[in-house]
Length: 129
Image (cartoon, rainbow, N blue to C red; front, top):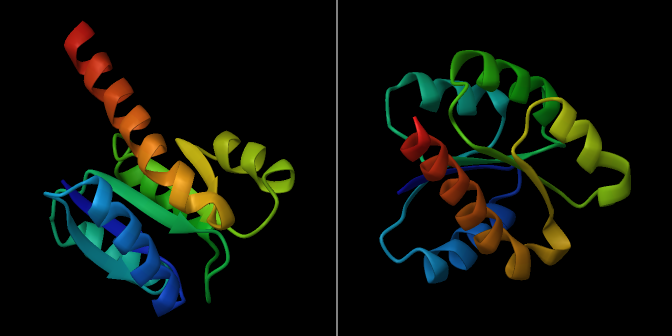
C-alpha cells in the first residue's frame, strides 16, 4: 500500500509515517507539505491507497484541497488529521467528503485501525458489486 501524508510540519509527517510503518509493514510513503504538492503528487500517477490530509496547511487549507481530491479522485480514501477538537471539525470534514477524521493527539491509537476499517469497507464494497 502507498500512503500519501500531507502536513506542513516535517516532524508530524515523520511521526505519522512511523506510526503507520509499524502497522503496515509493506507500506510505502510519500509526503507533501501543502495542498499544491498533494495535487501534484496525485496527478503524477502513483496509485495511493490512502491520503492523510492535515486541515491547517499554508496556502489552501485541507478542506479546500479535499474538495479537489474528491472531485478528481473520488475513490481515494482521505483521512483528515488535525489537532483541532473533533467536536469542532470532524462533522465538517465528513460532510466535505472525508472518509474519516483523526485527531493528531490520538493518532498513535486511532490512525492504523481507522485506515484498516476504511480499506476493509472499500474492499467489501468492491466485493459486493
